[in-house]
View (cartoon, rainbow, N blue to C red):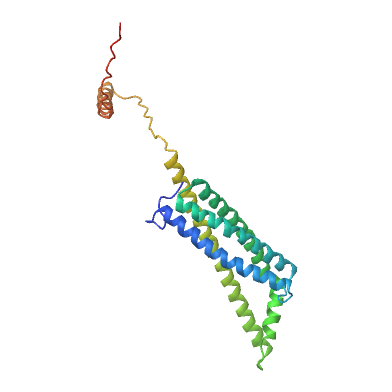
Length: 227
């Protein structure tokens, strides 16, 4: 199963070029930000928990790999090479699975009681005006809920876009394979319990259709044998 167009009307090849270019651009941005965070962690200017540090390291390394494969896929889409586009599609599947795993881990931490307690404490410490503790708690609770909903929505949109991109590139790989290795499609019709008159008419129609399809090949000239 595959699609034949990108965004309903555009060619698949153009879609793959756009997807590869956007993936490359986004991966570069994430990679630069990830390694900046790694540098800050090593310089102790960014203090995170051990689990968050591991996520930062893994994300930076993963998106560095995605940058290379995205460049590989972009070149493959421009040159219509099956192996390169297929490799890019495999990377997409792997990165989609990795994104799901990392995203689920991040969301579990986001909705954990430990995170709620830490975020609420940080929010309350940021208030310098003289307001009641109840109002501060209400404002922080609302801000925390809004941030959770926004982050969840962002992850969901990213996953949907990634899944769509995976399917588009997969469809283009199938299209390239069909172009290189065309298949002959035929239909087998089984006729059962057909009256003799109708059967005779069908045979005549099929015979006529067959005669129309047969190409006329000029007879070969026989070579005279020398005695």
